[in-house]
Length: 434
Ligand SMILES: NC(=O)c1ccc[n+]([C@@H]2O[C@H](COP(=O)([O-])OP(=O)(O)OC[C@H]3O[C@@H](n4cnc5c(N)ncnc54)[C@H](O)[C@@H]3O)[C@@H](O)[C@H]2O)c1
Figure 1 (tube, rainbow, N blue to C red):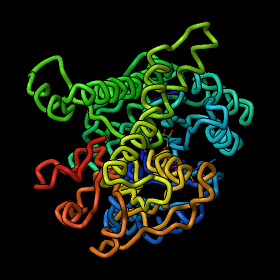
Figure 2: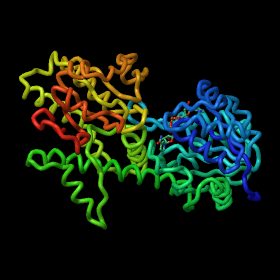
Figure 3: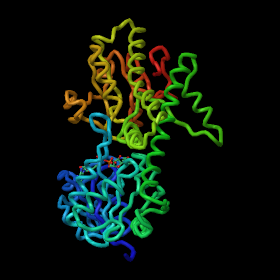
Figure 4: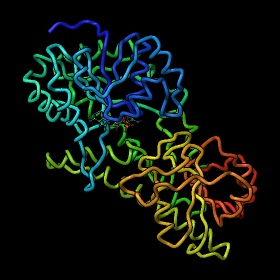
């Protein structure tokens, strides 16, 4: 197989990873075909309408109008491109085991159209072995071609810092592992025009394992500060002050922050991909499980603090009106996947509270498998009358565009899990950190 620079690629899965990547490839001059099973996203992209709030319509329009970016639901069109990049979801199933069905379905959909010389790169976060074992099998079976001989196969994990304006796809170094040296070379050729720094590793497995290390590192460190938050609070020490002081150390320390529990599509999920795969090798992942245990105990801990806070106002949680501030799992994004706010909501509802929410990025709760009965609930309005009507406001996400000055003035009681009131003058007796 001969490697040349690639001029075109399909990006399959046009979500939080696939859309910005498609735009960046197109900016670099590649002709990009976005493929998705979601017709709404495909239509939006073709009409240059963004469906992710921190990605502008203009950034899409620049590429669609230049003829470098278009979208389709027709997977046979991979025949028109040289590279295929897969960015589909990798959730956990009901038993909290990896669900790689989206990857396999994509593999089955493209296999009949695969041609000699094609490059297939998987970007979805997954356990080591997915690319060279699971995906390779469906691609080879469906195409009659051989990976590493007839077509190239590689893995390159996505690294995204959603809503961070300083973090640009082009500037984030990209780890790439190929099934063979030629596969690696071809994958490096695909990414090189679009990404400044490429980090080649020896295999697809090494690249898959790199992504898991990064996410496990976060999960374990967040668990550590969550545990210390509880211990230090019992000692009358403010964890936030301690982290600020510790991070002045110029070496050997990196700050992580406590919160109401893990959220998002990565940190609560990805570590368990490794746990599952490790069992096949007779190995345990005790750090991952301990971190999971500590992090998943956080919502209950926050609810207990809320109960104490209400008690200080001589109010039982049963019958109280509580406002959750922030449904997104992280500040300044509209992504509420796996958000701990839902767990907080459920726990407070189970204790008899009336629970509503305010989130500038979430106008209405969408239908989800886990919280189907909350679907359709709408964000309350931001006014003195509304905010004052709640017995307590529980800050779960510290969006920057919330007026915390008004909040401390209007709210009867505030439980702050994010140190969102740092620097805001407030009456300490009505604010509880949690
Ligand atoms: N969002 C992030 O910040 C981030 C960061 C690093 C890694 N990842 C990983 O990247 C992968 C994608 O994540 P995401 O956040 O972009 O997910 P997402 O849900 O935002 O997007 C996935 C897209 O894939 C589409 N899709 C589902 N099944 C499909 C199929 N069979 N064929 C074609 N399209 C299909 C969906 O319609 C959706 O548009 C996951 O493995 C995730 O863990 C995400």
